[in-house]
Amino acid sequence: MRPDPGLLVAALAGWTVLLLLLPKRGWRSIADRLRAAASGERSYVFGPPARTGGLESDYFERLLQLVRRELGRAVELGLPVYVAALAAELRGQSRRRQLEGEWHRSAAGLLLEHLEGRLDAGELSQQLHQTGQVPFAVKLTWEPPHQVLMPPMEWRLDWEQRLATASPGTSSEESRAATPSQEPHLLEVRTLGGLRLLAGEQDLTSGLLRRPVQSFVWLYLLVREIRKPGDRISRAALADELFPGLDPDQQRERLRKRLSEMHSLVPEPLAGRVQADGEYVSIDLSGCGLDAWQLLDLAKEAASAGELLPDGLADDVERILSAAREEFLPDWEEVERRATGARGVAGDLVREVRDSLAAAYVSLVSAIADSHLARRQPAKAIPHLEEALLRRPESEALALKLSAAYDQSGQPRAAARLREQHGLTEAS
Image: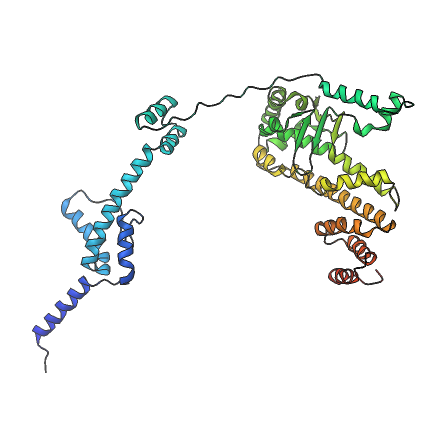
């Protein structure tokens, strides 16, 4: 029996109507998506048309393009939802244009146009006034402080006060010789835990760091001097470190300009330390107090003093340990990145100095721990050893000293746990 053609046509028509009317998306999300599109939070209710691009100028061709673009979305959403989606998307576009116009007329938008060069300062003030907004504050100007070429009078007064408080039978020469570490330095250079450059009460750090190339040169020469006192670097090597990849003549010319700018851009107490002697460049740290050298010298003195440190030396070690555990020039990577893009080998020298100072710190901890253990004062040794072992967990010598300190202080369980963690035996 052949099917009735009328029924087939009716069924096909019904199926077509259902296809065009019913959405093929989840009902629950349609309302929220329509609201979001109408408010401008979404560009499309579910997604963009299948095809994009420019439209033809011919009216009929443009109509066919639009049908091809939107047919997929119309079938997927169903005609009622599709019409609502188009209305919501058009309203959202209008809302976004409105918000964008309001933002461009706001203080932030006008400031952005000024920073991008589309508005000068006068036009910016005029636009702010016209829109009823408070104009920006006048740009502050910085006046460089007056440089004093002679040491501050406080140093003289402090020196006279120490002479007055010295014992009557002690001459001034003996008094100065007895307390050399208390004499004021012309420049105090602190590198552990952060860079500080102090000339008396004046902090010169920011005056150097605001100049990327000059600060790199100063600190690079400082690192080389700490690593090897009296070290010098040739102009060619320094120029290649600063300007890698350039022609050697261009490198030397740029280096010459940067060195000549040093005295005009960098505070004089710092610029005067850079010595350009013929083909070599170095830094002069005479009369400076440098914490890195103090740490290294104290580690050598403590290592040669024997197991029981003298009271004065032990006090010096205790005082320097808090600073000694800090990292050497922690901001070096940023200085190097700003100046050279970290393309040179200067970072290797900084890491070498960091390793030397870390080894000096461990040496000081071992020396003060040995001294406390020899005096039967394990409680004073334990905090230093625990801190050092956290920094150098691979050090078997530190683990052994800490285990011995635990045993002396009546903590056998802590000692056993430490030996088990580090694979130490009772004999070791």
